[in-house]
Image (cartoon, rainbow, N blue to C red; front, side):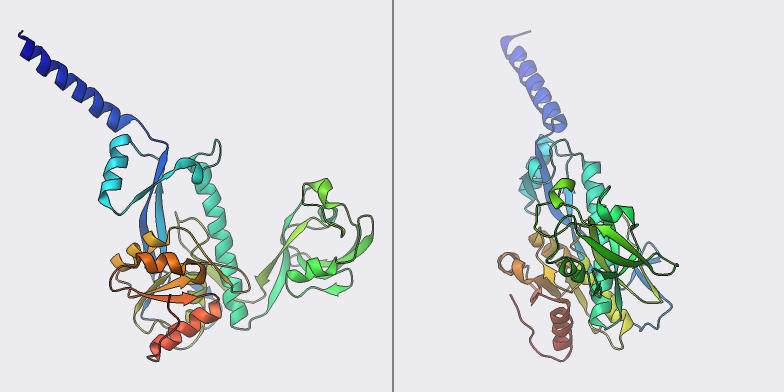
Length: 345
């Protein structure tokens, strides 16, 4: 074979090796891009997303779409280049999304837990906004802590240290001025049982891995829960994270009240929500705006803390509406329906 022939063979071999490496070698980055959107007033895979059983609901005709971000940990060298050139994805260092030794499955489980918590918080926020009663339950109990001797997760808290418990903040307030070693009475009600009162000796927070504090330590995480006779169920699989809370809460409000918040339009949005209806900022909003636009949305509800980023990345034809509470989000949609201009980013 001539020298030219060997050069051609060698060049093809190098190209083949580089191509193989480019397709197989994984880079320490994750790809971030627009994810699927879901109409919380409609159905997914023939399953109604939000169902309310035992209470009157009202018809809706528009869409309230929750938005997501796709995160992929399986990125090859060539794949990373292609995603970067597409202009619709970003590459981020893996350690910004995964902890040391954390797998994609670990992250999925963590996000699923946050998603489930966001559903509970959204339900409570919606029902509190509609003036339905709430109760306080022991959501978590620290192992071997004072509360662990008397309470089970799910028990309703009625009184703590002679303070009536109406909302979750009352528990911390009831312990103000106490000290480790003091005793307090806890009145609680296990599900389906009568009220019980027990005396508990308060501990020291640092002894149970918590931040040190002056007041006595019970070792429970209280949480507001709806105290109603009807049941609200959210059916949505393979979605994670807390950022759907706002749209879930709006959908529940819409179903339980006459009229239509979205008035036949397609409204999208994002935002973490707490039980009081406060809306927190989220990540990946630039990708969620693209996903919303591609799904046909004309209005996007933006957490106030995300406004600057959203304004810098808003696609054509998408109206940004600034919200900071569930009440402000409801009012904004009512203003749009009335032809008024709600706050914008």
